[in-house]
Length: 193
Image (tube, rainbow, N blue to C red; front, side, top):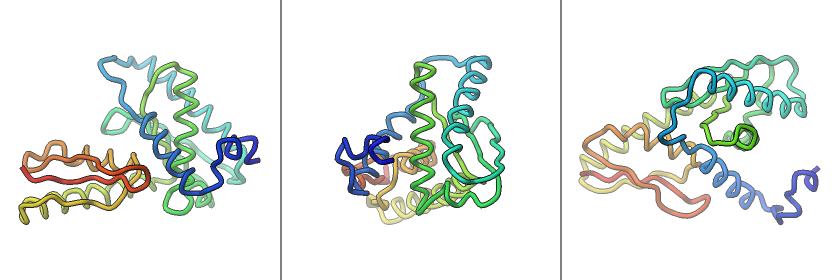
């Protein structure tokens, strides 16, 4: 199976190397479509393609009966939320399986439609709950940076998590954010103004 997916050919027998490749690819795929207006017809086409890809990938998991709900997120991203019984296997440890699933769906969708559009794959609201926690952590870090008059370095995060932090604090006039570091140690720094 690993050879079919190209992991052996790429020399990715190390879990950290695989995680780094997935993180970098997810960051590239999640870039917003800049300056282009997406029509409702385009969005429907993107959703149809992404759902088809997701259903095809899920055939390889033994998850039983599932439902995929689609909706538009706060930042204009397409969110596909999977619900059903016993879906923990789709989330994986610390959400890594879900990140990989999102990468696959996003990459194939981008290749099929010919341009990047942010697609978020969620399982029973897992990412929504994680987003709320991250937004709370972002606000706390901003308050700490302002009160202590110094930069606050956050823990290493995936590209998706860093994006949530940047979005959560972009309208806060007291601070600015920047990503620093390399690979799996890349993190957000909250800087007071």
